[in-house]
Each structure stands twice: as structure tokens, then as C-alpha cells.
Length: 113
Length: 113
Image 1 (cartoon, rainbow over the protein chains, first blue to last red):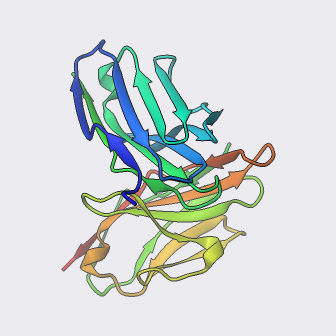
Image 2 (cartoon, one colour):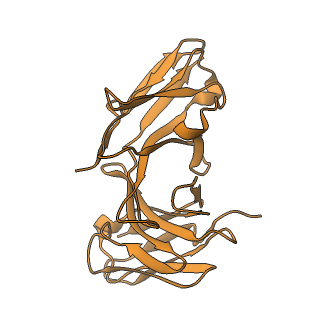
């Protein structure tokens, strides 16, 4: 198993552009999590899904952020429009249950200029 | 409010010296407690969890409910232990399927040869 897969690994975009980050969880895992990591704020939970349904999106910073999980093997995190303060590393993680170990992807390093 | 504190951003120790990475939490109920580690250029991964009571790579963590702490310890640090360490309390709320997970801001451990 390749583990959690994220794409792209690096993204550089200009302010105002739409950004879409992608994640493929480990097969059979019911939970999927999106995190953002910055030097100032550390690792923050943005949103998580259980069986493709969003359970808690209270960590999503603004309406510019949205996340979807159309099926058990794919999720997207979209930022529209992007701003320089969105620059961070975005991690996706999956877990068999919400209480188990989380398996992290390699992250997407986003730079908004 | 649920909160987890890792008071040291950076901890430097000499090889062979004891290590203690501090974690204090403020949670209602009885959270499950995890330590995650991120080695350079690698994914964030689980180091240990309280419920398993295992020693991983020589690390142990003792839950002190009175002090609400879950400090990570190792008697003799090795160079390969240099990494970022995150404490992460987790608890279930609002019934089955809803979980609250909070990562501390992390402590960077640097083991000096």
C-alpha cells in the first residue's frame, strides 16, 4: 500500500487564483482529515469526514476554503480565491476509525505570491 | 476550551543524555493521548499512544491525570531521535463518530553528537 497520497506536492500560485489540493486515503479507512501546518500556528485540523460525510468543519478558516469527499477514495480541499496568508503545508490523513492512529500523507506545500 | 501545551519550541540535548518532552493538556473527560513524530523529509507518523503502553524506539510516556500531563521520555538520546514531536490528545464527543483532536505546536528535538 502506498499510504495516503497527496497531489500536488508543491504548488505556487498568485493571489486570487483558485487552488485545489487532492488526497487519496488508504483503502478501507473510514475517516479522512485535512490539516494545515504553519510556523506560527503549528498543525491545525481544518475538517474531517466520516464515510464521506463532513463531521466537523469548525477549523476551516473562511468561506474561501471548501472541502469535498465525493467517494471513499478521493477528497479535495479548495481555496478560492487564494491569499498569501494561505501559504502553508497542507496535510491529509486517514484513519480506520476516528479514535485510531492517523496515517498522514506527504503534504502539499502551498505558496501564494 | 480544549487545549494542549508543549512549552518548549526547541530542545537541544547531547547524545546519551536523558530527554523529556513536556505536554500538558486541558480537556474535559478522559482523552486518549498520542505522540506523533516527524523526522526530516518524512511524513508525520505515530510514535506511541497511551492506551497501548508500549515503548517505541526507547520512548515512553506516562499519563499523569492529576497534573494533566503526558510527557515523553527517553533515558539516552540518540542522534536519530532529532525530529519534531507533537502531543495530540483526542476524545470522542457528541456521541459515536465525532472526535475532537488537537495537536500541540510541537517541540523540535535536536540531539547533539
